[in-house]
Length: 180
Image 1 (cartoon, helix red, strand yellow):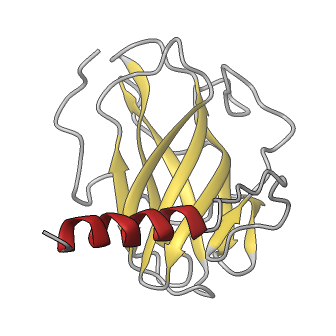
Image 2: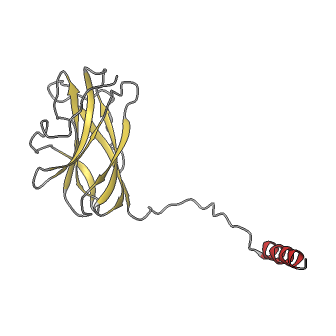
Image 3: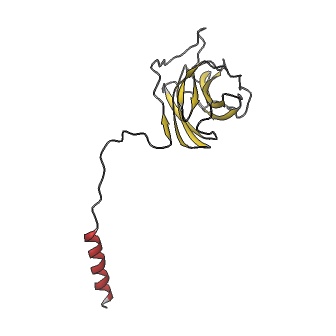
């Protein structure tokens, strides 16, 4: 019988002497470790085309989180989507030295009313300093690459470059259709 009041007294003392929780409301200005966020390129077009007027999918920005061998990419694309007949159907990560496809994120539908749009994917099995190219692909009637690509590394950051890599349009995985 004496144990219950004693237990109550101990719990009360612990609860009363515990330090109050302090919430830090200071804005975070330094980047989180293992995170690289790239700025959005200034010239965003919501209906991008190449020099010949052919609709393309431009990479606008990329944010990378994770750790070596296991990164997640959040890729922002601006594309001339009109529906399933013309839409950005994937973005991919390619080894810039070998031209080998390292990761492809299939986009299952068009983004007509959401431009530019961001989609994440991973894990991407690369090292922090590994040089890569990130590019998008336009699917539908005129299936092709041709938009702005980003090149660089997780450690060094990414910048727009001309796409000089070979086509990987027949390399799996490939889209199986367009939802809308």
